[in-house]
Length: 237
Ligand SMILES: [Cu+2]
Image 1 (tube, rainbow, N blue to C red):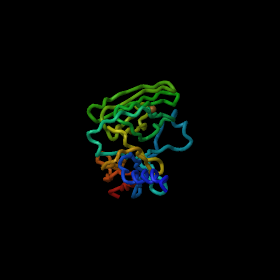
Image 2 (tube, protein in one colour):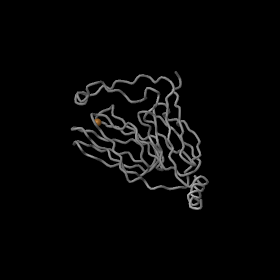
Image 3 (cartoon, rainbow, N blue to C red):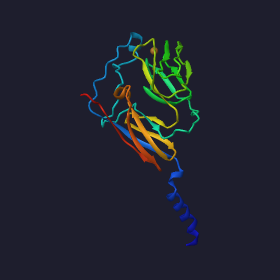
């Protein structure tokens, strides 16, 4: 029996002190209510011929069960006083067939990301921030494969980027002043990894639903992996 004691001690410690370990916060955002129909985009001839079917706006991208894509889920409060280094990864914001991909993405403040032109004609990448300290920029990309690096210093939810050549091309970047954020996928799920133990307010923000208002929030205590689901309701219908 003696030989089992170290193992049991280790188990007891792990159970007694779960708060020593960072945890994953996962969940799903579900849309309640029927979204208005998307609008068909009227592309010019050059762009139109790249698509075999009509392309629409992406205001409410939902799964059959109501899972809502393109929601920025992030820690709204609970991290104050802490500073974080921006992640080394440089996410790609692509321009392909006259559409931005992805439609919503997240980066940390001062994290570099690259806008790329994957089309064989001119796009320009034109961020139009509203938060003081985030600079408006404009990068013409006349050649296929061109990449331009961007980063923004201040938190902004969400920062709009447009293409001036193609007036339907918009994309939105959640600039968050820490690394604990995620954007929901096509099924509405998200994962915020490695959140340190603590008490947090988590916000789920959806551009078309919330606009200038805050998203929906929940308070959670992270002392191990946590599941937190959100419902976003379309009002006024
Ligand atoms: Cu364009």
